Length: 202
Image (cartoon, rainbow, N blue to C red; front, top):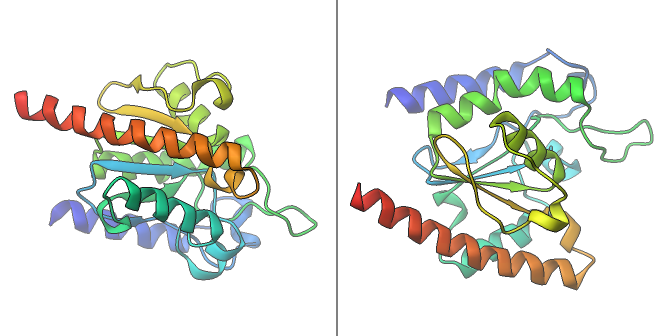
């Protein structure tokens, strides 16, 4: 219950946050959602338009694809934890989604993402896209490389395993990338089973 209280308090803090410029253009902050006891954590780049309107992560078209992929490996959204590197939508002057800037990432992540990881303590982190992959791997002293080269690979951080994947949004218009994500989810399923066996043996 203490961990749940800490997570609830952290998410309340995120909703009220005014520490970077993104608070001026957001509709709602998007802390993340899912099981506090999740073995698997997904980290994307940042909320998009639908997420900004609802306050929930991955609920647009990319989120529906993520839900489909989870179902294919026998998991429900409620069993994992889903969040983003930054918690408010990065939006261009033209009103389009954009990548978060380095200063937005460096302001947000120590306060929120790192604390979410500490509280949930997942066995596997699945990074979705370049931004999340670069952040997590750099943070743990690992060389990220291009997502096209390393997607579906497993990296060992000090207390969890990391599997980078293409962001689901990239697959909405490209069948080739969708097929790559499907194959990577099969690898993810095998990794989760392997991690369960290792935990049982220890």
